[in-house]
Length: 97
Image 1 (tube, rainbow, N blue to C red):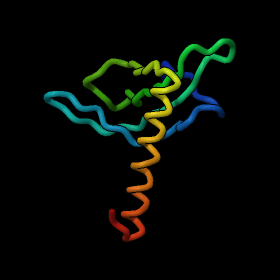
Image 2 (tube, rainbow, N blue to C red; image 1 turned 180 degrees about the vertical axis):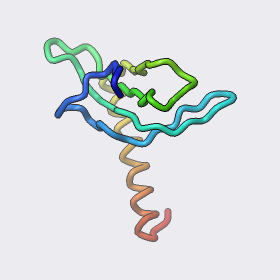
Image 3 (cartoon, helix red, strand yellow; image 1 turned 135 degrees about the vertical axis):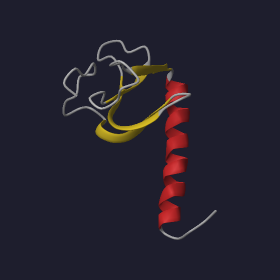
């Protein structure tokens, strides 16, 4: 990702994750970067950012998506991610709900 908009370093949450860009007339698989962050000084929100590798994606210009979440929203999202992670792990272990 030579023209990456996000800064990727040792602190980036996920520097390589599988992603899919979907539109009404296209669907493209790509690698992506995903990051959860907040300002170092006087943080006022949690930011969830992601950027798809646009080296092979032909439908979208280089761009980054960013959600600004309140602490409560971030915790709600984290809890939902935990719930679904548990479900996927259980399915891999042969368990079911």
